[in-house]
Image 1: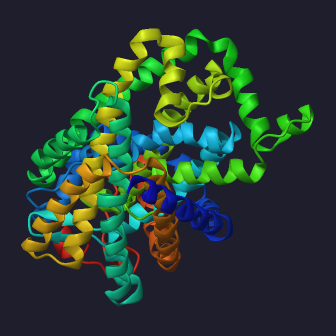
Image 2: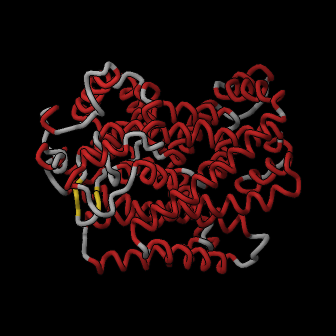
Image 3: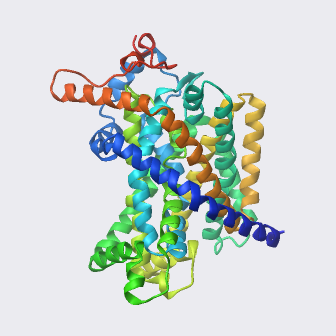
Amino acid sequence: MYEFLLEISWSVRAFGGFMWQWLFLWVLLGGGIFFTIKFRLVQFMLIGDAIRLLWGKDKQASLEAAGKARPKNALSAFQAFWISESSRVGTGNLVGTAVAITMGGPGAIFWMWVTALFGAATCFVECTLGQLHKKNVGDRFMGGPMYYAQRAFKSKVPAVIIGCVIAVCYAFVFNSIQTNTIVDSLGSLVPSRVIIGIICAVLFSLIVWGGIKRIADVASTIMPFTVAILLLCGFVLILLNIGQFAATMVYIVQSAFGMREAAGGLIGFTIAQAVQQGVRRGVFSNEAGQGTVPIAASTSISSHPVKMGFTQSFGVLLDTWIICSVTAFLILMSGVHVSTDLAGVALVNAGFAHYLGAFARPFLMVVLFLLPFTSIVGNYFYGETCLRFVSNKQSSVLIYRALATCLIVLASMAPLQLVWNMGDIFTGTMVTINMVVLFALRHQAFGAYKDYIRQRKAQKAGTGGEPVFHEDLIGIETDYWKRDRATK
């Protein structure tokens, strides 16, 4: 059975390579460049506001703006941010970065950075639209690409298609990748892959059956702590070997454009390989443009939809420019990518072991359990939200949870190549569909952006207060932002 699935993975890989070469890559980068220009480098201009919001500096203004329309289980900006980060930060930052290097060469890291640069603008647009068209459903806010797609096309059909694709991809395909990483990382500690899968499934069940608040509490507790430990360790190791930093940076840039191979007369990775692998691994890691981050962004209280846009845009840069870069530099500075034939988890282990010695393995076992596991929980949250849009019957939700739990066990035995190749195809498909919707609604996002900038300037000048949004300010129709519902 394993050999049969392995054979299938090669066909899936060939199809995915064709689609990324001729469609997905151009849609992703082209859309990101367009939004970067139209929104005037928004991914950098509002970073200060993003940090201020995450520290809770305008919490009271957001509560007052929400008024009676605030659901019982609405999340704070901090909680929503870390739900999205729990899905972003995981296998893609460690194993995905290693895969980018082995499949596309060191230059792939440069193209991961480029993907994040333009992807952050795309993420701003999609998360702003997610907040614009969120709904107060029962005891929580719900939103995402299904809701703004329905508004864009005045039909539920494309929205249902988007919801089905995300529900299948995140709870099944992407969670298979995360489970595989956990199994590979703990393989030396627990020899049975099935046992590891069962343990993960049990822990997963204890969390997701507790609802959105439990998912948010787990994500906003475990993820910041794990990311902080990983970054602290990485930064210290890089600083201790700072003499190699500049040379490694040059190495990455030269490899990105094939200059290193050309100068040395070497046969190495082509520019096309570097670009494709960099973009694939970049968007898999930071999720910009896939339409999933707006699902998390829509759950939070906010006085203005743009606030969730620039907050989540900051998350894209944090994910790829900081976390992925730490992994990349430790691998490249250690030289294990050329001195060994290792790949995936083994290459990450070798890179850290070069500096940490015997301590690297237990350290990475903890990190490579916590990060992928919280990603499993975050991915499931996206999937269930989409399922509830398609069918809000409790029986459908219960069956979905049961299937997602069982698949964690099954994924522990699946070939890694198959789940990664399927992930590539689903990622590109979601980006392509979502970009069409974002382009159709770009004027709404831009109107909200201009309104926020106008109010922010007035606040800084002392002639206005915290930016507060109402739909009539930009002449659109929404379900939540009506003036009589946004104030008491």
